[in-house]
Image (cartoon, rainbow, N blue to C red; front, side):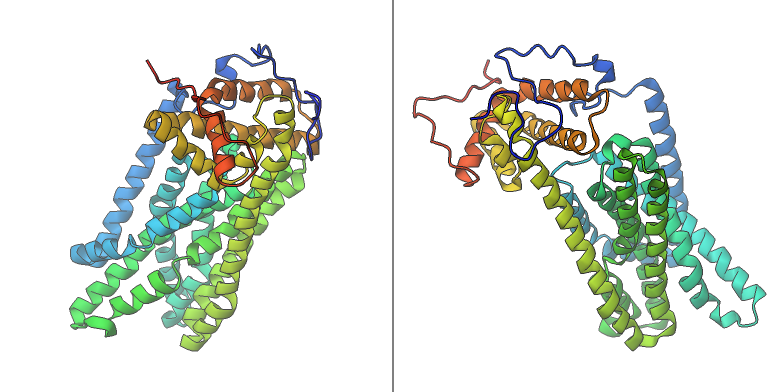
Length: 446
């Protein structure tokens, strides 16, 4: 067995401190300077409340304006029909992107902001700018009939992708602690695109239904059915695919920022944004200029491969995060901070879920939260050490490491037995079963 304080397999960087029977955590900063805060223990300062209130007010105003514009365009009945149809793919897409984020889940407030920004702010900017640009093209060019197609192919991709990218940029700048890599960029961009597509689908489906009502069409031959098939069935992932390219650029920029690569930190998001614009223009142009067969060719040979490739990249990045836990946390197990089976349990999503289920069965629903928090802090600890090993430890490494170990120690009585049990039942490692008289401590017992 390695001596306490020596790095485990695959671990390098600063030596791991040995775990005493009652650790002192003398390097933990004051509570006000904690970087890794327990979710239920965090408090918003007065200035943060004001900023949040201003942001919520602005998004609410954008929501009122964009929804009023859409209702005016579609009519009340068309708006309600469009709303009902547009909401169908949202839960599936939200669940898919949240699944990618489960290893190191970001706070819901970032995801809700991204969705609302896409649905209200970005959609409002897009509808106003696209309408103005289309009218300008129709008025100032010889071929007014081509204004809509030209606007959809040239103007819309630039305006819409820039408006959606603003949400990713805001979180990148003001929530840097939550934006650590490719997965975060993909998830934030994905939620923004889901929100934007949701509002856009209300407009297109509501307009189609209003048109069908005017012309007396119904059934499978109606414009509503065709629009639903193309936008909801065939390509619900179109906007996420475009904007995820921007998110990947920002994710790579977050990694480059740690290595002080300033040129890449600026160039990579710009490159991702340009690629998203090109993909968007190709998709819109195929529908406007290439006819049905050209549209299907672009769908089959560009959109589907791009969707598959980006899905693979996102899943690979997620698995890479789990691998980081598997090779980094054994050093803390060797030093006594973790049970021997915990690193492998923490690097398996199945084992993580099993641990939370076990805690719920043993101690009730309240025990799930400390286990989830323990997993979150252990993940942050692994990433912190991984960055220190690759890029040299920063001056605050010891304080941040002890801060995370302190949070984990407070939850160890519930989380460690649950993870040990999960490792055994999921087959991650072979752990002898506990003695039949052994009782797992219950901190909730009065």
